[in-house]
Length: 512
Ligand code: ADP
Image (cartoon, rainbow, N blue to C red):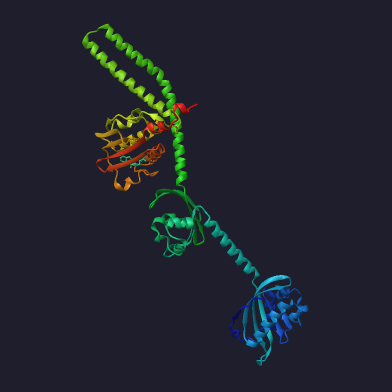
């Protein structure tokens, strides 16, 4: 038996002055209906009354219990404990309560037992009464609740998502539960965060804005969305946020999906590039042959005109027309070569490249966007071959050139200068300068972040510079920026010269 006595207070029952009430019948009816065991015993410990619930607990019919003592009805230990409790109650002369755990009729039961003395109308003690409440179900459901709470905690502790439980209070949303990933989002340990208001963590308020919670509480419909958010020290991140109302509480799950989103977009971009590449290869192939005829025929016409020895004035105009036509056709050939370069080769192999050729191809590709915004200056110096991938580098330079063009005023008049220099023994440098709007300091540190864009929806993806940065890094180079708002911007690309890699390649003698 585990017993703990709880001091009880003997209260005078509030009885109405209605002596005609049939108390005996009332007591018996009530005792039969109650789920608790109710019994009385005389001073020798013999049962003088027991209700059906009590008889059921002991495991015998009431008539077999009446007139008998506990020692004849239950195990020796249980009987001893019960008799001891009876003795204490009679000694105390007042109500005592105890919680007990004992075997009864083959079942382990948890009891809340209340006992008090029974007196005759003249005050003389004639025995005792008892009420025993079976707490087993209550204990079981308490244990089940504790277990499910422990399971819930373990599940949320090991979750890869941030998980919060909030409760609506007049002062705002109070944090009731915070798992480890949620701690990271709040920037505060669960112990310190639980019990505080969400509004005390302004940078994390996005997880559950009050109007959104109110909407979820009002409609009862779970909320699920993806959103972009700036986190201090982490820049732009993408999150999936799920809110579910549970009574006056709100369960909030927040998953960081930035990487997934970036991969998805990259994949889509790669697919688009592959499709463009195939299209480019097809177009280039189709145009190449007729273009070759045009060029060779123009060359033939030019030669024939010289041979015909026409009047100088007629000759001049015709030669000018032919020169224009040849220039146009040459440009077309350049474009076809750029398209072929874009379509050629897989994106990971590197080889020694003439950087100026790659730059000229990129200019050709971006020319449509550059032409109207200003003039282009190529300031090239002698360079060794660089080690790179022409498709990837074209992608980088086209992106830098188009960004530069977009930074220029619509009216034109700006200048884009492409400068190439030997940077060190092992690196070359390409700079793309523009005289555009420049980049404010607060944006400058974020422009290489994926999705950072200041351009309108549909025009900017915010991925160009982030991808370019990765590509240049992947080639062993560096991409950096400097800018003065209102004056212009310079992007600088450092790339490794090919000789180093060539040096590392096996020599002829080593190849068998
Ligand atoms: P997008 O061009 O799709 O916006 P990028 O990653 O290429 O994505 O560029 C990110 C942002 O950097 C642009 O939205 C713009 O604000 C800024 N930016 C890039 N290049 C320049 C430039 N040459 N001049 C001014 N701002 C620039």
